[in-house]
Amino acid sequence: MARIVRRAPGRPKKPATLTADPLLRRMARKYVWWLSPEEARERRNLVISQVMELGDYDDVIRLESTLGRDALVAALREAEPGRFSARSWTYWHYRLNLARPSAVPPLPERVMP
Image (cartoon, rainbow, N blue to C red; front, top):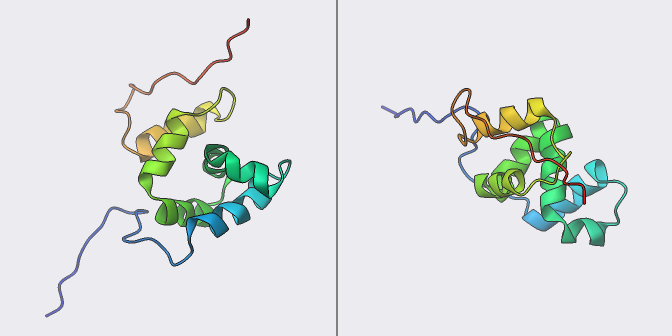
């Protein structure tokens, strides 16, 4: 008898066959259109955070399965002010198990000199 292995929803078992560089280039063309591919490659967390904020479900799952959860966590923790909406900020903290209910850290704020 075959055994059923249950996994948390939305968490891919293993990385997809697409490697990180081509995926990030493709995502950058779609979500960071104002930068050249070379500039976008240098700002990996920008590309990741843009997909997290604006991406459709398939792109987000593809990104997570290729780069891994840690890359999404790093992009969230190092996010520039204004990169995430309050709704996305809360969602991703819960989705990545970085906060408990009512304990989401505040959004990054711009510091005026």
